[in-house]
Length: 280
Ligand code: C2E
Ligand code: CA
Ligand code: CA
Ligand code: CA
Image 1 (tube, rainbow, N blue to C red):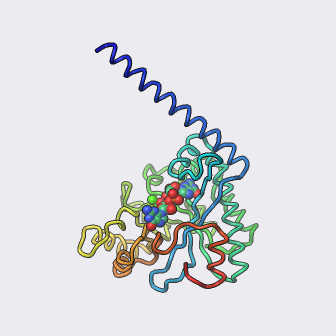
Image 2 (cartoon, protein in one colour):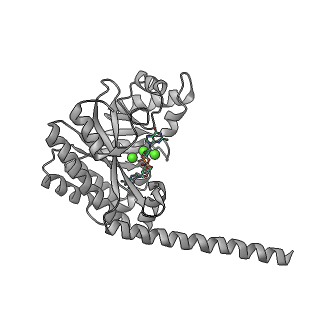
Image 3 (cartoon, helix red, strand yellow):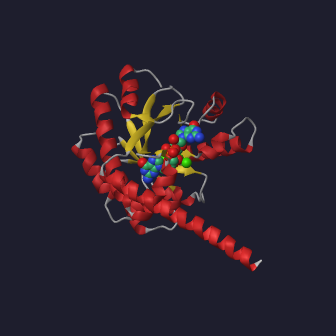
């Protein structure tokens, strides 16, 4: 039995070592690809549920690994956070978004709002995220309120003064704030009053099982009512079916985002839709 235990230990330890090795390699590849600015930004349309118009989109980073193909941000963003690479990547994303949205606005003389996901590590890095983003936006000549910064509620929990100051500055600098993934974290409503969130994004987990008369419908309905009372507009994530869209509209939800409308697409594709006036 002792012998068997030792074998099993050797086996697991071997697996752990391989995993650690694979992780180190992935970080190395990530570092190289970020240095070469090889990561891309895609945009997912956000649709007004009343008019069907698309005047908003969320930017989502994409990494096509030279050998492994596309790797999900769910996998590589945490690696970027652990290694600090998120600061440089975040900067590249800001730069790309400001350039793309600037072009859409110029080409179409249209209003457009694009949201950017900002990680807590980025906000806490000491780099003045709001200041840098603001300067890039001003240099590109894009109007106030074009950029929306998405943060998750986890970031607000410990009342970190630096985070609070950064969020206030984002608003002072003419950008808007969205509270991402609402309902998945600790969802204390008290902090909603403290910050000037313009948008609340209902997490996909609530939208997924939406059906008339369900608890999830009651929850969505209540969240939407509450958000409106606090002066926020609501964006539902992960809208995949007509039925979900109908129920969300019935509950008074302002915007929807999801595969029903469009997957995240390259900048040119979204620009094409804006130019042709055709909804996705
Ligand atoms: P998120 O901010 O909640 O982004 C929404 C995710 O849901 C995206 O996944 C999007 O492609 C996916 N999605 C959209 N519509 C649907 C739908 O109808 N059904 C389903 N099943 N999924 C849908 P993605 O692009 O893989 O990103 C995953 C997460 O990675 C994001 O979640 C965000 O937390 C993080 N992330 C993505 N891009 C960035 C970025 O540029 N910066 C940072 N810091 N994080 C990012
Ligand atoms: Ca988001
Ligand atoms: Ca989200
Ligand atoms: Ca999410």
